[in-house]
Image 1 (tube, rainbow, N blue to C red):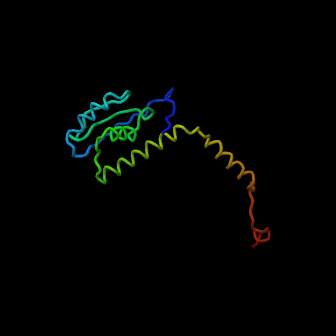
Image 2 (tube, helix red, strand yellow):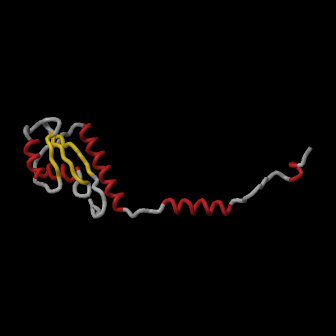
Image 3 (spheres, helix red, strand yellow):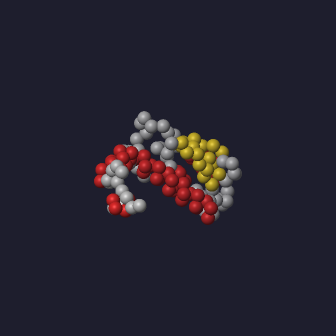
Length: 139
């Protein structure tokens, strides 16, 4: 995933929870130690015993990257349907945010006003009534 430059922009702070599988036990403390060595990543104990909380700037890390590193190291993430769906949604949202940061800003207002201006120029103005004069003066 291509990351935009972080210069001059406010951080996009994310706080996520990484949930591990029940087996093998005691994965969360070991993973917490591993994650705490990664730069620009804050690690906090999770609300659940099998979870680790992480906080990061999206310009430096993503949940997909962090969980991929953990899986490469042999950790097993929770694979319940709800966890998979939440994980996929977060991956999509973060990827979309990064993509939108990399695209140049388009002047939408200007192009919209030009479209309305061109349409207005082609439209007849004033008190234009399509009713024939003999019908308007009918008594």
